[in-house]
Image (cartoon, rainbow, N blue to C red; front, side, top):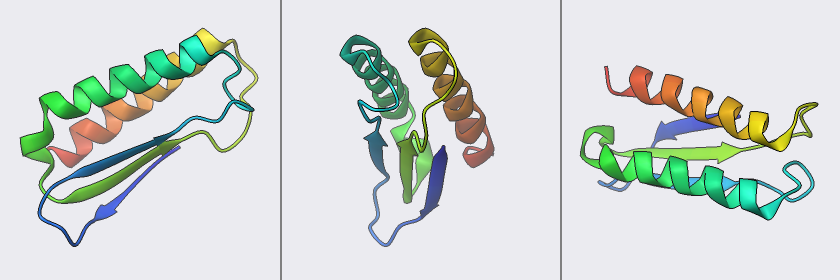
Amino acid sequence: MIRYKRGLCHNPRLAIHLSKKNVFLAVNRNKTRRKIRHDFNQTIEKFKNFDILVSTIKQLDAENILISDILMQEWTKLKTSLLK
């Protein structure tokens, strides 16, 4: 799940919450965080003043690698819609 809203401060902010309960392996949680953070930092100037929250709300019935892919697909969709 990815949520966003216009923030009150002048710079974009990113929060990533991937719980151990939903993504079991720390390797996959950290890899997903790094990918999203890296992509965010590359396009930070274009996000204006959005506050973005990336999180898992429930356990997905998929392998941990697929969960990472699902979150990255959602992140890419959000990024393209916000940058238009």
